[in-house]
Image (spheres, one colour):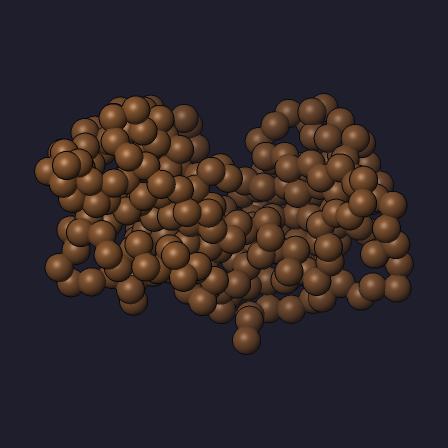
Length: 246
């Protein structure tokens, strides 16, 4: 019989935010695969490093971190074949995914290549979006509020339209787009409603009003949350300005 492919969300960074189910599956599979950059360690693996067993086989899925678009399809094609060999041999394979596997997760690219031939199970995880709202201590949305999630690389006119139409906005994939996005938020008159979050749930976490951030760029693991909906969460609520977590 073929093995099962598991895609598990390992959360935003704090190992204590891994679900019991994800932990059980991780420690029971003979093969562990995970995304990794070509210039450093795998963040997904680092989250669960204390749970990985010495006898487990590891498959790093190395995607070069480049400003220009890298043809990642060939990497996923190659790694899907390698994983398929283990599955065909009857070995269960678990693929680690930062946050949640199907919320901008790289696991979906392996899923589309392997789900037609092998049994697959998805274990949801706590996304950075949920973790950021908790760290900011401000609800994301309520009642009939429309929550808009928008990647920062989108063109200016598209971002401004998203800012206009959404009641609550989460801006992800900020990185080198930070300065441009901050100016657009200020142009939209929403700077005082925006919170900036960086490396949420880690010891290096930063949470502060966006207006207090002076950098020209932000790390990959950062997010901006804006609320302009019907609830009166801004008035009378002091936005936390903190670094580090307990």
